[in-house]
Length: 338
Image 1 (cartoon, rainbow, N blue to C red):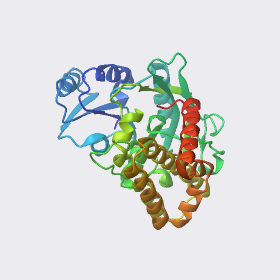
Image 2 (cartoon, helix red, strand yellow; image 1 turned 120 degrees about the vertical axis):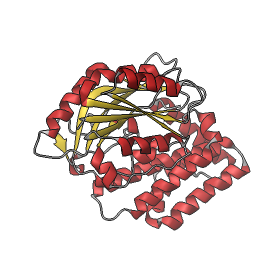
Image 3 (tube, rainbow, N blue to C red; image 1 turned 90 degrees about the horizontal axis):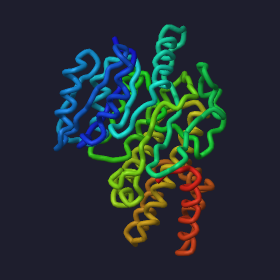
Image 4 (cartoon, one colour; image 1 turned 90 degrees about the vertical axis):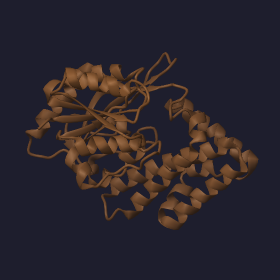
């Protein structure tokens, strides 16, 4: 059995996927690299097959009809044979020194007395054109270099939330919790970083800059104009996360607090994109989203609607919407997202 399975969802990725794969090959025989070709129209499938032929004990090429990022991640989980599971998008890459540390740590943890469900590390925003790279690190929120539970997690401010890039799950946990991402939908990485959390008991945090998250392509899903065009998919993910949270049974109060904070961020992003769209239809969708949250989970609605971010996103009238956009731009500059 491999130590770590790494899924690389690929769709028309010929221009950059080799950089991603080459950064992962130094993991050697402890690692299984699953290149999931999601119905690409370019040379992606051919490149995947070339790597699988050259590194048959490390790389597997999997070809499927196009189902979107979520379908590719689902395929990765189904085919994973490693004890732990990581997703690395095809336009991203990893730091080799941190990679070696990650693998050594996972190996030590598998020999230890406690099962670790989630390993967390830092990621770096490789923002195109930015002279200073922003690092998402958690050293002030999480215990470093030790196994810990949710009870030991300190307050995580809005800028310190876990994303797919910072997470390595135990594979069996993902299977046991039945994680299945929706197909033909963008922004499902939020579901990946959210839905399994109630099942996570023990975690481990390495303060190392492992994952390099490229951001800045015009066609990238997190580009603001692209998000506005795809707002219905953002709203679908937002609602699925609300539904998932609502269907959870009793959970640790700190897990619950973190998940509410995460939903606050996602709902704020949905709201501001609808405001930025500037159409009557978009404003109606914003109202529909809040109505959905209220009817699905009234207690959650109260927390989200009356949070600081919720208040800023729901100021009345055109003037209020201008203030909302100004507040968003401040957060955008401070946190470094697109």
